[in-house]
Image: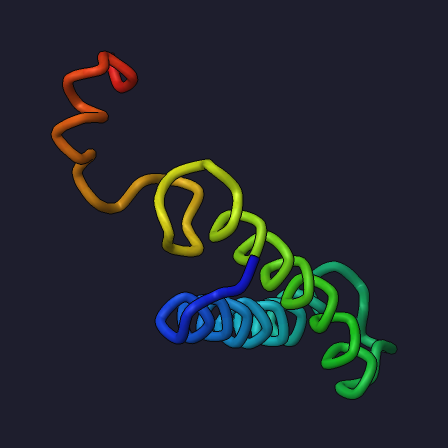
Length: 90
């Protein structure tokens, strides 16, 4: 099961933004919760885990029969006529 180019770009974009949000969240919230001793390098490394999980989730959502072919678990396109008529979405 391979991803096509648009799916790969979608998964990578989600991972990149997940990583950036994690770094920003740790930088902003760290001092509020007493994580002043955590270095920027450690914050960057810790933020890699949510990004890696984002890649895994995006890949699984793209190849599993959930949602549609995008990296989202929620269907972003209207169902095909055959699917709609089957009552699958009722």
